[in-house]
Image (cartoon, rainbow, N blue to C red):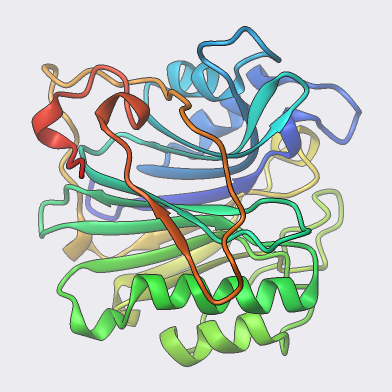
Length: 285
């Protein structure tokens, strides 16, 4: 695994451009991409309560990847939100609530993954639809991740930023922190013209390439196309061994709305982060 890859994809609840809800099709595209880390938005996850089809567990099992669920709201009898899938060993997970009162709840999964050259921190998010909402969320998120220059970890902030214009304040804040970044168009999948999905990497030299996965099934599987980033070999990750089976995601707790100017941070115990991962590998406070 000389050049690890990270994929971000808004899967639109696994509803494709043909109107079909097809999690198997989404899983097939993910297997085509074969990324080491996958962050997904708009995924249903309800492993315990028998609500809507548990897409998060299905996608983790179908790709043989570890799953970290980041639900943000209740929807149609289940939980709904972000999902991180990875073949890497998960060292630590936090969930950050970046919701704005009166708007749809939003959050971020903040995971530290074990890499051969040291820890790899991946922050996966999905920002809101409102311009001022995104600006506030981006500012809170960047405050949460801190100054990447002060850390020895490779940092990847990735997801659906929902920013339609390149001069939007959310993107300007990110560029001030991370510098210029490639931004290929991902939306709509049948004729992409908007770069809604973004990846920011520090140090900048760790980012080798950013591209769109344009396979025919990817175009049909969602209204977004998958964004795939390739990292430099220095961030090569060590996959888990046979004694570390791939867990499926669990969901616990709801999402509350923090006051503006405050970011609510959740650190769950191991059973709410991963299934079947030994307790010693997930820090809980």
